[in-house]
Picture 1 (tube, rainbow, N blue to C red):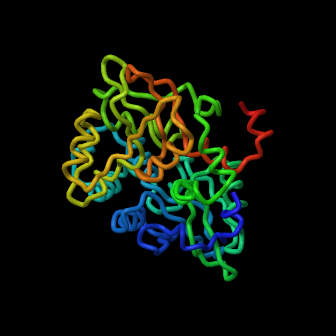
Picture 2 (tube, one colour; picture 1 turned 90 degrees about the vertical axis):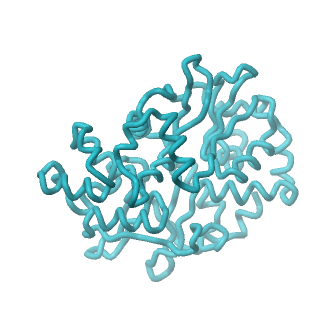
Length: 319
């Protein structure tokens, strides 16, 4: 895409919602880092090493959840909000790790790669695709964090450009069946399982979200790491993770300003239709279904970006 070659990594097209980049210090207590995520309504933040004077990884909500579920029997989840649980676990010596550097990137979800602010977005996007990463940190000439670019924001931007880019316009007319994209093996869980089980599966499989099925194996929804927002509110309790997924997602709608990003498509839908739907709903995956609402596959943001930035001959070899 020509437009991506003209924009710099420092472009204001891709800041987070508050237009302010939030980071944490590696020596901060875990609870301090957690409060930073909660107060800014974000799921991860770059971690700064004051000794080496550089950012070196991401600290995420999943890192905190992983630490809790690995060190509790599950009964402790009833004790209070997430900050209270961390404090009680430390008092009982259940939680041996106390500072951010002890658990940052334990979820192994966000390999840390940085680019300088003068890099063009086409090169940044290629770097993200080749390394299969969701976000990349941008540093200015002084080594200061000036942006965090995510694959979802890039696609959101691209979704508005089909009428402005000839190559993209041609690509947009093809169906996903013609393009042979997506994965047929879809990670799923039944809706009567606990939300905690779903987040465990997400962590174990190294994905950002999974399909939710009913007893007939029909697709009824999805659950992702973003759905941890329900326990981020200081008034909500970790015990909600013990709810069946169906009830957890219903509670999510009632208690928060949650807007579902659950998105489906058919194999004869065009690439343009799918990308524009992703941009509109800010979805992170699209489930491919048949006329009986049964899963046929899943499209990731990685799949979408590959089609846009990788050479066609390389894509043919992959398919």
